[in-house]
Amino acid sequence: MRVLSAIGGGLAGAFALTLLHEIVRRVDEDAPRMDLLGMDAIAKGLTKTGQNVPDHNSLYALTFAGDIISNTFYYSLAAAGNKKYVFPKGTMLGLAAGLGALFLPKQIGLNPRHSNKTLKTQLLTTGFYLAGGLVASVVSKAIERKKDRKVEHHPQLWV
Image (cartoon, rainbow, N blue to C red; front, side):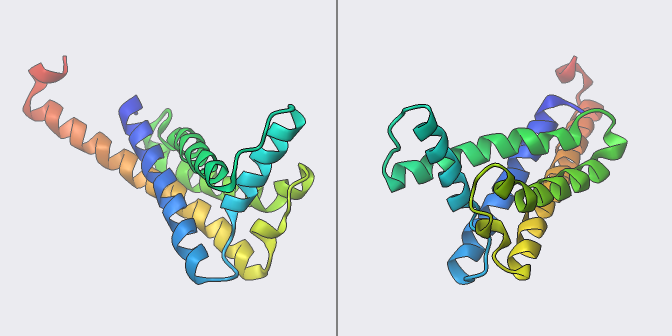
């Protein structure tokens, strides 16, 4: 698939994931708090390197931007290579990210409760990341189809 399709799908997946987290965390006390997990990770990294940790709002903004950028590139992998496997790759990437969010925090010294508080939290965490992978796949395929139709109708524009 083309780079634009991959990045576009990855960005859509990243925004879908972030939107799910942001909406659900405001209405459900069992929602995953990946924002807090990310803020903890950045704060610990800055502290270990002797840097000052910014105030809460700045740390949140930094975490938000980092999540969008890193998840965009991660989910764009769904569209890498053969377009026949975009949906299975998006599914596997989403599940892998969700399971990583469950099992890695404790291993790297972060608070696992942000993604593991209850069974419901664990299911939401995994489900949100899976949704991000599926959205990335759908959008990547849609962008690719649209580009293919333009090439069919206007081949001289895409030489």
